Every structure is written in structure tokens, then in C-alpha cells.
Length: 243
Image (tube, rainbow, N blue to C red):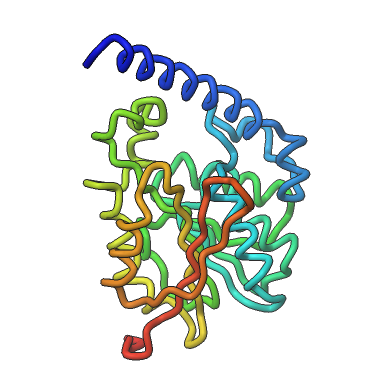
């Protein structure tokens, strides 16, 4: 590697760290959060983590476009403030909302947010579908898609909880593959999956390959202008059985 390449590499890393720092301040600002999602997170629920990311914004749009009043929603990997579950309950008036996470500290924090707003949302621990016993009209999953062996991930994977939250396995797609394998069982007949990813960390080719080899078919990809987050709207293939 020559001097010019080294300088470009170092500059890129400095700019990326500066970007993450700026975005962290934006994504933990409670006024901004209220403007986007309609509520202020419960005090003490941030744990120094972002309330939302660009993928959350894309999934938010998918919920507004595709979820109707009286439908049911399952939010997998709901995060510290239960953002998508609470947003759906506040703005769509879903008849039933379940929000799960597989890290106890996170689901406890999310439940405090729902309780502080006196919302009828069921928050509970589940590793993907392990503790799910119902079917839903929509399942949203802001998936972990970070390949922790990628050098860019070192600015995101800061501790053991971050590693558990964001690691998507080898290549970033292992958790998504497992999710799509089991999701059909938990959808209603006309139910849809909204899968959120950011292609900065996992390529379009990888996601398209995973979807094409899953029990789902691609329906739409929802984005917000130039923002990097994408929300894939998926429906069950006709040959998929409702076991």
C-alpha cells in the first residue's frame, strides 16, 4: 500500500468516525425522536445507544404504506425504546402489537417505554420466534446484518451487547436466512414481512440471494430518497405451506 492509499484510508476512517459521532447525537435526541415517531423515549432507556437508524426510517415508511388499522404486528428485535412497535400502536391503531428481543436488558427497557405511554403492547423475550405462538398480519425485522470480521464493524461493535445485537453471522446474512426460514409459520394468509437492512454493511446481491432461496418472494423495496436504509416487503410464495 503506497502513501496516497494510506492517507485515503486514514481519512476515510476519520470521516466515518466523525459521521457516527454526529449521527449518535442526532439519533439520541429526544426532540428529533418525537418528531419522527410521535413520543419521547423514557428517561434512562438509551444505554448510550442510538434510538433508531436509517433502516428504522425505511421500515417506518413501510408500516405507514402497508399496515392498516385493526391489523396485527410483530416487531422482532424491537430495541431499547421499542420504536417501531410503539410507532405502529400510536399511528396505525393496530388491534395487537407484540415486540420481542433476545437481550433481556433491551426488552426490559423497551417495556418501560411502552408502559410509560400506557400502551397495550406485549413486550417479551424471544430469540426470533422461540416464544411466539400467534400469527400476524405484518412482521417487521430490523435485522442484524453486520459481519463482525469486516473492518468497518469495529466502530459499531463496541462491547459484548453490541456484538450480540448487530452481528448477523458470517457474511452478515446468517440471522436473516434463519428468520426467513421460520417466518411463514407466524404470518396470516395475506401477511407480509418487512425486512430492514442497510446496504453499506451487506450487499444487495447477498440480500437478493437470501430472499430468492427463502419461502418468500420479493414484492417491493422501500427507501427514503438518498438515505441508505432499505425495507424489503416480502410475501409468502404460493407453494409455501402454513404449517
